[in-house]
Image (tube, rainbow, N blue to C red):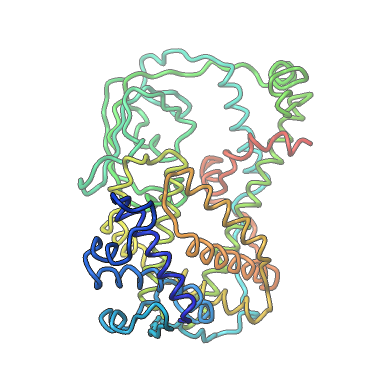
Length: 468
C-alpha cells in the first residue's frame, strides 16, 4: 500500500477520533487536540494503530481486489497478515505491506457444449383456459355489482362467501402462526382460494370447525413460505350466496363505458363482446409471460446440469444469504412482514435454516451463475456502466425506503453480477433450442389453469391495454 494512501488514512482516522471520540477539550480549539492526547484518550498506541489500520485496509481492499474480482468468490477475501505484525510494521510515512487471501472461483468444465443444449417446456394453458379465466374475471365484476343473501339450510358450496375465523400454524407446532393468515371473522370468497381450502370446507355448516395440514404452493407470493408444511384451523361462522346481474351490453356500458370512472382510468368498452375479447387477450398475455419464465427455469436447470465444478461452501452460503435477503425485502414490500418481525426473521439461525432447507436449489443456482459467467466471457457480452449505476441507485433507494443498511460497494458488485447473468440468460434464450409442448389439459378447471399461469392477477390490470 503506497505511503500516500497510508498517510491519507492516518489523517482521516485522527480527524474522526478527534471529533467523535475525544470531542472538544477545555483549553484547545475545536479540532486541534494534540495527537498524543488523542492516542491517550482511545486507550494507547495499540488501540490507535488498530483504528488507523482498519481505515487503511478498508480503503485498500477495493483496489486490491479489483484485479482479482473475476477470480474470487465474492466477499471471501480476508487479511492473512497477523494483526500484531501489521501494527509492528505500521508507519504513517511509509508504505504498508500485507497479504490478502481469497477463495478462488472453481473452473467450469462443460460436460456438454452449452450451445447444444435443448429444453422442453409445456404450455401452461390454451385459448380455452384463457377464455375460462376471462369468465372468472367477468364473474368478479358481476359480484362487484351484485348482492349477497344468506344461504339457508345447507353447507358450504364453491361460489359461496363464508364468514370464517382462521389460524395457520407451522405443521410441527413450533413457532408462531404465519403472519397475516390468522384472522377472525373475515369474508372468504370461495372463488378466490389460493390455499385450496374449499375442498376441505365443502359441506361445512355455520358453526362447524375443520382442520387439516397442507403445503404452501410453489408459487405462493411469500417465497420464504413456499413448500413449508402448515396446519389450517378454520371455523365457518356464516354462509352467503350471490345474486348477480347479467353480463350484457347494458351492464358494460353502465360500468365500463364512456364517461364511467373506468373510462377515465383508461379502460373503456363498448359492448360485452368487446370486453370479453379484451380480457381473453390480456389473460393470454399473462400465460405467455409464464411460459417464458418456464423456459428460463428450464434453461437454468439444463445449463447447471452441464456445468461441472466443485461448489465451494462459501458460494452456497453467500447465495443463500442473498436469496434470503431478497425474499425478506419482498415480504416487507408486500406487507407480509413488518419491521417488528425483522429481529426474528434476520437471526443467524433463520438464515442457516433457509440455506440448509434449500441447499440443492442453491447449489444449482451457484452452478448456473458460474456457467453464466463463462458464457458472458466466451461470447464477449457486456453491460454498460451507466445502466449498472441506474440499477444501483434504484436498489439503494429501496434499501433506504425500507430502513435497511447496505454496503455501496457490495451492492454495486452484486448488481453488476446480476445484470451480467441476465445478459447471459438473454443470449442463451436466443441461441439454445426450446421445444414447446402444447397444452394437453390436466387441470380440473380454470382455477387450476390460473394457478399455473397467474393470469387472474394481471388480466384485470392489463384489460385496457389489451383492448387498445
